Length: 131
Image 1 (cartoon, one colour):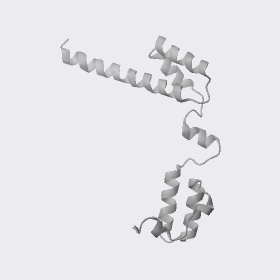
Image 2: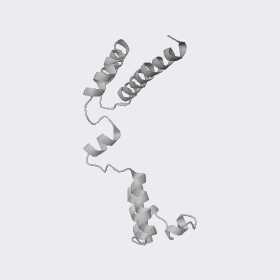
Image 3: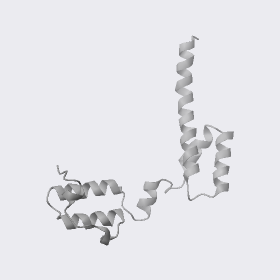
Image 4: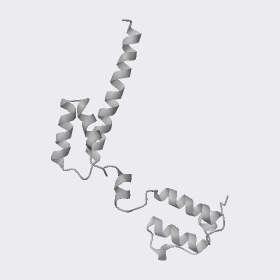
């Protein structure tokens, strides 16, 4: 078999296995709900069975292991803070929110004390940039 096709076959089979192994390893390491022993056991399983171990883990991992799943399970919004702030900014730019309403809502989303919201319009806070 020519070296080109050997390289193609190597890429077709090796790269997905490496990506699968890396993703499963990263997911195990960043899980806050699993104890150190459980994480260590999974990592050993990945090393002993490099293809089957990550597949089994990803197929049977408990729900709520990703940040979005934990946020939704906790009853929080599935939308990020940046998306919420962008929506608030759009409402303000269209004139649906006053400067004070926008500043109050923004302070609530960012977690700033409302007494920290300074006087002045949002246009002044943005440095005069309005679209």
